[in-house]
Structure formats: C-alpha cells, structure tokens
Length: 296
Image 1: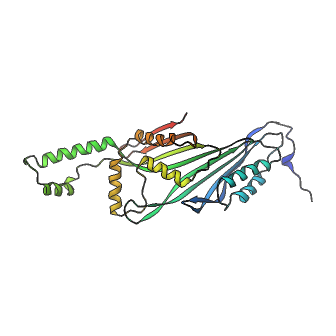
Image 2: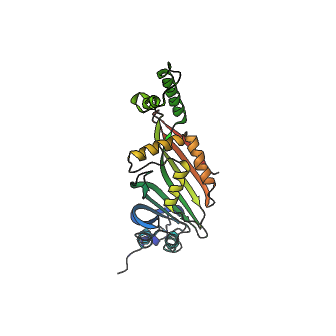
Image 3: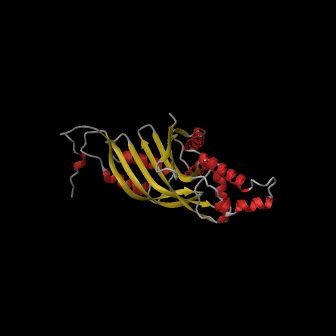
C-alpha cells in the first residue's frame, strides 16, 4: 500500500526557506576515546538541516535513523562524524544545503591523586557542534573546567596577621628558639588567618580547523595544567596538604586565571577562534568575580 508523503508536497501558502529544522534532545550512546581506551557515555543529540526549498517539511525520521546508524555505540571520531554529516545532507534529496549536529555529554576522566596512590573520576561537561555546508565543515567544542582559586589579596592579609601575631607572641624575646617557634606555628594558636579560596570554573568555546578532531581528555588536561589548580577526587591527608601547597604556589585573581588560559589558547595553532568565561564563585562575597574574553 502506498502511503501519503505530505512532507514532500509543495508549501504553496507560505513559500519561504527556513534556517534550521530538526529535532532536539535525542538520547544516544557514544564511544569516546579517553587515554587510548573507549568510554561509553550517554549523550543528548540535536539534529538540524536547512530547508532551502518550498517543500512542506524535511524528512526528520531519516535524520533520526542516521544518528543510530553512524553515531550510536560507534567509535566517535573524525571519520564517523564526516560520514554522518554527509549522510544528513544526502538524506534530504536536495531539500537542504546545510546540516548541523550538536552533542552534549559528560566525559568521565580518571584523575590520580597528587601524592598517594589513590584516584577517582571527574566528569567534564562537553558540547560538540558541527555545521556542514556543501564545501566546508566547522567544528566547535565547548568545555567546562573546574579548578580552585585562592585570593592573592586575602593571602597577603593573612600573612600580615600571622606576622603581627608572631611579633606579639615573641615581643619580649631578643632571639626566638627554633623549636618554640615551630611548636607555636603548628598549634591552634598559630592559625591566625586563612586566605579565602573558592571553586572556580572556566567555560571555554573553541572553533577548530576542519581537519582537526580533538582528543577531549588531552584538552581537559591541557587547560587544567595551564591554570594550575585542578579540583581533586580521592585524597588522603598528604594529598590535601599538597593541594594546599599547590594553591599557595598559584594565588590568582580571576584576571590571572584568564591570562593563563588565554596564553594557552593563543598558542594552539589548530584553534581558529575562541571565547571563554572565567568564574570565581566567591566565598567572601555573595556574588561572583568573572572575566569574558575572545580571540577577535
């Protein structure tokens, strides 16, 4: 029995082309390479094509089936992505000149502790947007990188309070006994003030050259190293102490973190454009300190 195909009928009432038509928030399992192994993640996919004819609509079911064929449970790489985008355009039989695919997922990465033999997983939100026309393909990647930031001003003020307290404690002594000083510093009395720290975030958007397909775990590690104080997973006391020392070595305002990140982005030859937001979720204030920047 021949079923009616209303979609292919000409739209005579309102003949107009449309920028993007498709579906959002389709569940799809991906296989993402992490440290030379493939990890299964649950993703949400958005599928769109342009409607560049007077047809009543696009063939949405074809896009949905292509997602299952090319992306679901397949090793996600440049080859499968290119095949998917080509198939999306071909599936519309001349109705569309552009196709767009968005994928959102959280990437679990096993992170070692700073000193001990422990490790644990951090999940990093990632979004991939691919736009393809007849002649070109644009890949945009968005990542969220959490880290710790300790305020340089607060650290300086804390050091001054410690210096003042030491002066008061030992004001009557011409020479301070080393063992006595050490004992005082290690006691509760020696905890005069602590600089305020906060969990912070870098929200990064990258545009990549057409021939480049990123290793997402390597990107995360690169940006964490450029800022210098990544959040930890499983920790013992020695790891927590090392983390405190790491923060003391990397005192930073949001401007400092932004400049570190910008220097890394500017050094990446495969990045054609970028924009980012740095967000320090203040523990001193009820508001956040932020920086926005972009390549152009």
